Length: 256
Length: 383
Ligand SMILES: Nc1ncnc2c1ncn2[C@@H]1O[C@H](COP(=O)(O)OP(=O)(O)OP(=O)(O)O)[C@@H](O)[C@H]1O
Ligand SMILES: [Mg+2]
Image (cartoon, rainbow over all chains, first blue to last red; front, side, top):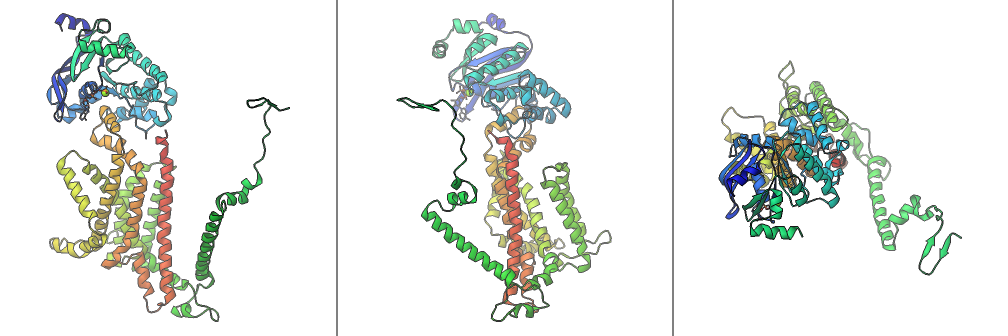
């Protein structure tokens, strides 16, 4: 892609994530091939692509839930390596929302949200609870604070998961198909929260097949296939004027 | 008209009256009809099993109470027929005479108050831990695990604070059973958890060490462990490091149970979905915080039945210390029954009956309590 075009896509000069020549293998199988990606502060990036193309693996490398074998990943000025202290430092600054919510079932909603601030950030309990209530209000479920995750609907659980990540005041939020385990009527309530979050200026990387969401909030759409970034562009360009054949094929399949 | 009939279906135009249930469905008769005599075969089974139970229970009552001998100075009382042609029953006089020995063993008479004090403290701490409403669980737990052994050492061994020293070979009876069982339980749970975590560790050295430890201890009968601890171990230890025999036995029992505990806990760890680890890591929790705050609370909750099972079998297995010459509750009852002054057929029988009753009462209460806890803790998993 031309340099001029790349510039047009960025919203600020501050680099939050810098991935350079990153490769990853599972045994003999190469999942990610020469990934280069720079994310600037305030960007909302949507990653899409066919199943098995390595989208989840890519964003899981950013908080080192997966290790990469070659290349560099720098998050918030810290390079990811085997140094566990550095890894924990990065994880503190990077929030993650999973497809299957992964709330802690033995803790109440409020405790889910205050656990990391109290134990990782050493925030006093009262302060952590106030913060948690603030974010639970923001995702519109303050009244569920004392329930257990098992008593909530899927959409509510996912909103708790978002609030839980936000309670750490992360600099980046990673979403891995946050709505694909949800019933249609719940997808909307979760997407609304995510749109609201994007509008607040949060840096977000979002793996999703919700193309309406990509159109509405993304400033950049990245298309992956077979472990490579095949195309990236503004949503308008990406959807109306796809460059590669693979993108065209993919779009024709999902935008019936 | 409350119903209109058309060709397709009945359609109700007014609510049907609510009727009381038929008589044979409710009350004791209804319950019995439903559960005991629903079919001729079931009825036959109910009658046979019921009859057998009544026969057995009557047998025990007759032996223990009707023909039981409650007073007496020696075996004479227990071998004299109470009436013409009636065999004497249970020899409670023997139990009464030896009762203190069953509890304290050969602990010096004038020092037994020390055991009582310890028992009261133990019961108090246990109650504070077991009753959900009592606050300060963490502090109570710490006192229980670290404070109680120190207090037990001071009180039971003595030799400090002006208390006379009591050698462990004088300990016995229920006291010894409880000391071995409680120390075994309190030591084996944390050890088992550590071994289970180690067995799943990513560090090969730690993992192989834990696997070897678990498999070696699980592969050896407890009797062998006890013989090793009491007879073999002193041969290997350097001179002057000859630790107390009881201590060696306790450590042997604890290590033995910790291997079983480790496998039980590992079962719970395996049931925790990968997503829980990932969510904890993604929040920046390190290994120990993740393990202590997220993984173990869930894993241990799942394996409460298995943990309790290990506790119960440890408690009963303490009777094996008999083979290395320690007189636990069962051992001392057996020794008492062999006393020339009391020996008779009914003496031993009554002794074993009491032993069985006491062991059963302990194990059954632990089991009931664990079921209660399972229910109480289940709220988090409701789906
Ligand atoms: N732990 C693993 N071991 C081996 N192969 C793996 C592992 N995890 C993922 N893979 C493989 O890596 C490839 C990329 O997986 P990834 O989950 O990143 O895909 P994805 O783009 O997120 O797909 P989806 O849209 O289905 O979630 C797939 O071919 C998958 O089979
Ligand atoms: Mg995926």
